[in-house]
Image 1: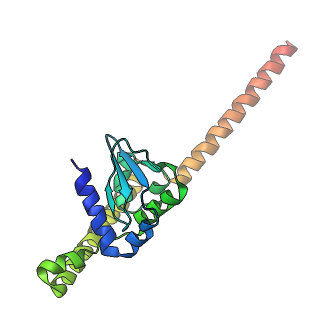
Image 2 (image 1 turned 90 degrees about the vertical axis):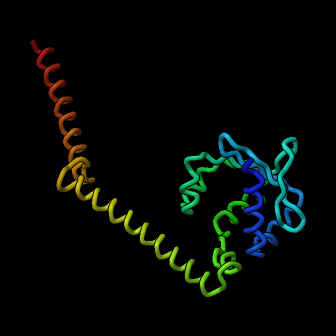
Image 3 (image 1 turned 60 degrees about the vertical axis):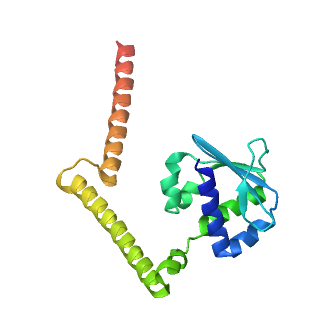
Length: 191
């Protein structure tokens, strides 16, 4: 149900970029399977570097298991999220898939220009990017303000220095309790 639109979107991005489909063309006939629980789909690379849906009985040359919890981080291009994808199979194909995932970008202005014209499309995309950055900045500022409030004004969170001091104090009390235990044992043996 979602496989055809996903493959169509990926093919649009590959063709739009030009360079990406050329890179994939050298893997002609290879199949990659992606599992995003509860969904799983396979793509076979065609000779022009585009994708087609792979039949379920076709064995995959490369497989990627992507936890759904990683999708937001992958969408934001969080590099640490890529390391959490479980992948097996053809290492060259996997390297290419990860390279494309990191570097393939949608040229929204190109698609929008077909409807609105070039200048309007560029302005709309620039406006959207500005709003997106504003939302990111606002979220960051709010997070920092809440962290400061919870550590300074209404302490719910401990500062790193406070945690270190607490750990030292726990170690000191433990050492003193050990010394006291040894002292009691010595006194007990004497009596």
